[in-house]
Amino acid sequence: MSIAEADEKEARQAGSSFDMELLTCPTCGAGIHALNTAAAAFCSYCGSSVMLEKQEAQYDPPEKVIPFQITREQCFEKYQSMLKGSFCADHRLKEHISADSFRGIYVPYHTYNASVDGTMTLEGHEDKGNTTYYYKTQVKLDHRYEGIMHDASREMPDNISESISIAHGAQERMVPFSPAYLSGFYADVADTDPDVYVPYAKSEAIRKGLEDTLPRLKDDSLSYSMSEAEKALTSKAHATYTGDALLPVWFMSMKSGKRVLYAVQNAVTGEMWADIPMDIPRFALVALALAAALYALFQNYLALRPEMVMITAMLLALFAQWAVNSRRTRMKEKEMMEAVIQGETVDVQDRVNKMKRLEKRVARQNNHGIFRYLGIFALGAASYLSMDLLSGLDNIRIYKYGSLALLVVMGLMILPLGDRSKLPFGCFVTFAAMAAGTAILLLDPFHSADMPIYIVTLAIMAGVIWECLELLKLYNKSCSNTLPQFESHQGGELL
Image 1 (tube, rainbow, N blue to C red):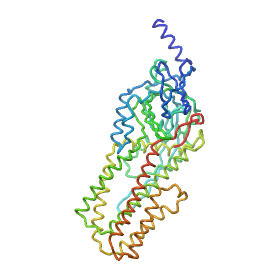
Image 2: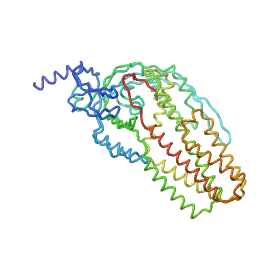
Image 3: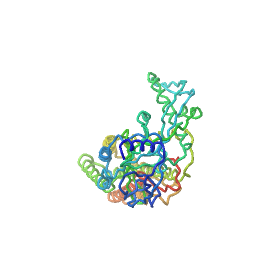
Image 4: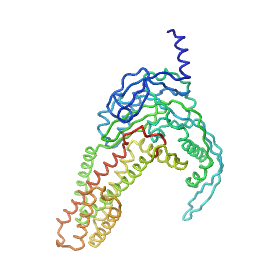
C-alpha cells in the first residue's frame, strides 16, 4: 500500500468505526481496546495478574483527540517524587511499581458548554478592633465556558478523573482523531449517559464563575462566605452536551488484599492522583525512635511525678481515640457512598461540595510532607512546655480531678457509639486502665505508692499503641478502593 493510499484509508477511518482488539478482564469485567499492542497480562482497573481475553470488536471513535504530551518515564518520575514526599509510604509501592506498571490509555470524555447568569449576594464581615461589622454585597455573574469535560468511561472512577481533569486550554490542544494516535496505547469507549454529568458541568460553571468574580473584590478587606451564594446560583446555571473527545492518561493499579490501589496521571497537564498507604512496620520504628528520644529528653531535663506521667498518657489516649473516631466516620461515609445505587444523578450543590473535597484531597497529595514534619515538631515542643509547667504542680487534687474529667471524656467518646462491636479492643483496654488509674488516685488503696500508677500508665499506653495501629489500618483502607465490578457501574457515582 502506498503512502497516499494509507493516508486516504486513515482519513476514512477517522470518521467511522474500525476494527480493534477488545481486551476484557475475566475478574472485574473491564474492557479496553488496543491497536498494535502486545498481549496484556494484567488488568489496569482491578490490578489482577491475569491474561485479558481478546476478541475483535468495532471501535467508534470520537471526532477529537488530545495526543500524549508526557512520556511514561516522566510519569514514573512524578510518581517516585510523590512517594519520596509521603511519610512512611508503603514499601511495596517502591519495590513492585516500575515505569512499565503504568499503562497509556485514551479515556473518552464528554464535553459540555455551560453558563451561569444571575445575581448573588455575598455576606462578608470585617473586624475593626473589638467590633465586627457585617456587610452584604451583590455581584452580577454572566459567565460562559466551553470545553468542560468529564470522563465518559464507566471503568474510570469519577473521583479520580475529576481530580486530574484538564481545567483550561483543552479545546486548543484537540486535534481531529486519527487511528495512528492509538498505536502503542489503549483506548476506552464512551459508555456512560452524557446527561449523568450535566450537574457536574453546571457545578463547574458555578465554581469557575465565582473564581473569576472574586478577584474583583480583592481590594475589599472583607471575608466573604460563599456557601449561600453557591446555593443561590444552582438554579441559574445551564449546561449543554457538545460531544466526546479522547484524553490521554497514564494508569497504574496494584491489588492490595481485597482492595486496589490506583495512580493516575493526566498525560497533558501532569496532574497526578495516587493512593499511597503507609508502611505500618516502618511507621512503628519511627514512632519507637521518637519515643526513645522523648524519653531521654524528659529523663534528663524534666522531673515528672508519676501522676503527671499518667495524665499525659490519658491525654494521648484521648487524642488517639478522637483520631480513630474521625477516621472511622470518614470510612463509614465512603462506604455509604460506594453503596449508593450506580447511575444516580446528584444535584448541582452536591457536585460543588464534591469538587471542594476533591481540591482539598489533591492539595494534600501535592504536599510533600513539610507541614507534617512542622506539625510533629510543634506538637513535641508544646508537649514539652506543657509538661514542664505542670510538673511543678504539687497539689494532688489537680491530678485527681483531672484524671476523673479525662475518664468522663473518654467514656463519652466510646460508650454512646452505636456499633461498639467494630471498635478496636484497644479502646476498651485504655478505658479500663484509665478507670483503674482514676480509682487509685481517688481512693489511694496503695498508700501513694508509685508502682501501681506506673503499671496503669503502661496499660494506658498499650491501649494507645493498639488504637494507633487500628488508626493506621483505617487510614490505609481509606487510601484504597473496592475491587470494581463494571457490569453494574453506569457512571455518576458519589465520593
